[in-house]
Image 1 (cartoon, rainbow, N blue to C red):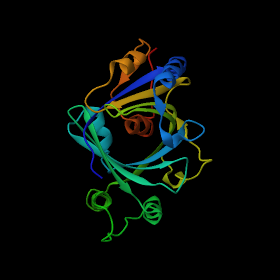
Image 2 (image 1 turned 90 degrees about the vertical axis):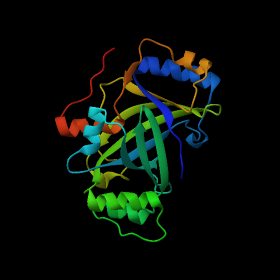
Image 3 (image 1 turned 60 degrees about the vertical axis):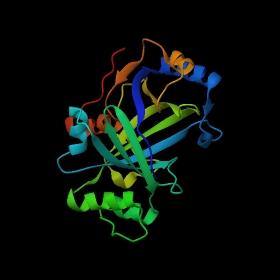
Image 4 (image 1 turned 135 degrees about the horizontal axis):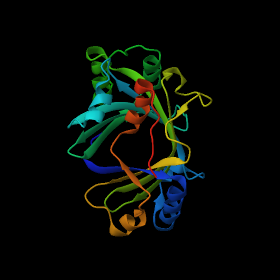
Length: 237
């Protein structure tokens, strides 16, 4: 699946501010149709890195361009499994994705490198190739709950992500009762703003508040940092 480079900004926010902005968004935007009756969904992603933690260090050092693989599911379901490759270049993000068969994911979770098949999409073949030649491996589960809003003009997507947590126990990917570690201090969550060429003024104005703290690091970096350095991410009010 082809994509295009987009703007992507992340902000840390106290829950009281995040909830207020979320209510404003509810008045002007539609929620993603995939959210269902609850208006949100749970996301889990397996992130990959090599033995040198290259993806982690490239994010820390601001390497440009850089890219990382992840496998994502929603609401702990095995029905929709996606492999995504995120590439960052000059402050813009490009995401490409494809379907992953359950049996292939089960092999990866078990610590095996799947075999190539002629039917596999290119992106999945690229992951397997890097597992073979770069020793790329699954290292971190990143989980959170998301409330997403969309706006067609400009392909705008505003998401409110709560309860960011992680685990290095890859075998727990589908386990709804798995133990996770919290990443942010209690009451701190994240807003992400994504769009193509232009963010409409009325949406930008809705986001304006001095309580938001811009953050340049990926969720993977913030979660992996806990494993590597034993640090919980701080927040300045």
